[in-house]
Length: 325
Ligand SMILES: Nc1ncnc2c1ncn2[C@@H]1O[C@H](COP(=O)(O)OS(=O)(=O)O)[C@@H](OP(=O)(O)O)[C@H]1O
Ligand SMILES: Nc1ncnc2c1ncn2[C@@H]1O[C@H](COP(=O)(O)OP(=O)(O)O)[C@@H](O)[C@H]1O
Image 1 (cartoon, rainbow, N blue to C red):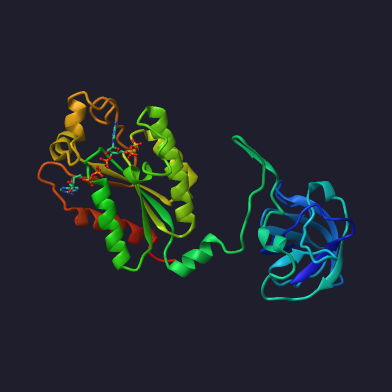
Image 2: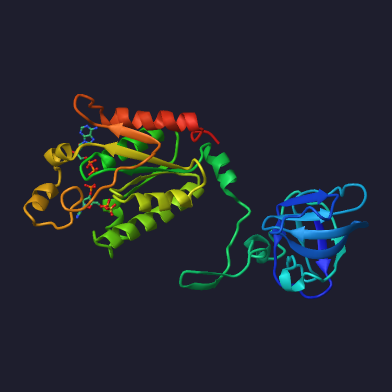
């Protein structure tokens, strides 16, 4: 590991997983920060810049022969890389050595990853700092031999969301794939117990579950959500939280009269009798998905079993590469 040091006290701490060496000083992205000039293992660096995960070193002559990762370090062995306030300070070498792995003993800040991010204000949260860990999504994917994603099941009450979610989870489990179901009914027993079925509460229900699902997907898990999620804009907002291709929207397309005939909980009967107000499909809207990845239809003579429907989703996952790392 190559170690560089600032002459004056650090502003923040950090470690870089990626070191790039370039010839031209002019071709850096506007997102990166100027760290000044540095001298590493006897090599003069014309300029050095950082982006959130990488350190870019510009030099005049031969390429620097650096092994990854690189970290900046001060006398006290606290890791640091300069931030904007210190951008004009000079970097000088104190010790240039090669390690194959980041050291855990130097300082907890080494692993905190808090160094290269700016303080943020998000919603009502002020002065917050993103926390990165060297163990990343790709490492978890390797471990699990699958790609985390969100399978978003949407449809009317009684359309079969929970049943299909279970069939899907069972089938994937038997193939050695890790899944987790976030079921609307279940989450409303805990995390979302404060929410009603008013439009804004349904939106908040979906937003929170979308955020939780995103965390599961980042953990490498195939997260299956089972929510009515009646509004397109809320589903689109959840899609926007995930990387491209990781949000798989599945419409359980079962006509209202079929759901009503099933009525496993007796809720349609209560809604028709006016004893439940704002029931989806009766006196509250359901917006069918536009342009979703999969439609599972239960119409007329086209009656597939929950297991068959789960298999349609699994063949999609196989084709999209989610069942391998
Ligand atoms: N007013 C009203 N409208 C629709 N559904 C109702 C309502 N009141 C209670 N329930 C029961 O709550 C379950 C739906 O919860 P969700 O969290 O999936 O709903 S939503 O996505 O926030 O619209 C739903 O479960 P499922 O039948 O599994 O869909 C119902 O059992
Ligand atoms: N593919 C299917 N074919 C026939 N019946 C189904 C199918 N999927 C679910 N069902 C039945 O429909 C009812 C409602 O299913 P459920 O999974 O509870 O729906 P939801 O979670 O959408 O409210 C249950 O009685 C279930 O056995």
